[in-house]
Image (cartoon, rainbow, N blue to C red; front, side, top):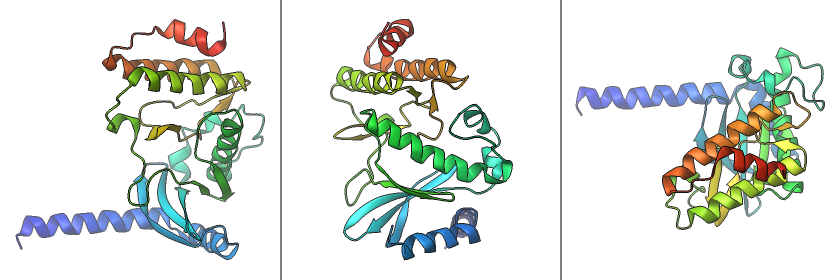
Length: 240
């Protein structure tokens, strides 16, 4: 085997070990053990996605698949995200030492509320410390792809569905805050994910985040010749 191939394999092995050590620290392993003993999950299968804030794994309970989102416990990762928590009346007295746990709980609550409002999101199942358990979206062999990675047959229909989700959320007093082609899965129909940054309308950043969400979605769908203005989309969502 050539030296460059050996170095490449070794680099991948080192990166994998680093990721595992960052995600599965002692406290996370204790939380996972407790979830298994409480019969929330039976096992953890394989990683679905990796990110700077969290890794998502497929898990299993009986004959049902679940998604296991494990937030990194390094508070440095979340130092720029406290602005989405501070100002939220549901989470007061936020401290740096527990911001990761609060963020996991926040996404759990956001998913639950969005689901109640009629937005298609993964059904939240449980939350413990820095671990969120939710519905797995995809087939037995393949997780559902992101919107940006699929060939859309009817882009106008998908655009209207996503805009409709945003309108339902707004009507119910919530803004997703990170809507884009990266945070929508395609599985029969669009499924909105990554709701950790979602805020209530009472949050001081809600209008700014709504405008950003609309801008992101309109930018993406313009390549399909859907030319709705940001102003018209905002009026639609706000019911003006």
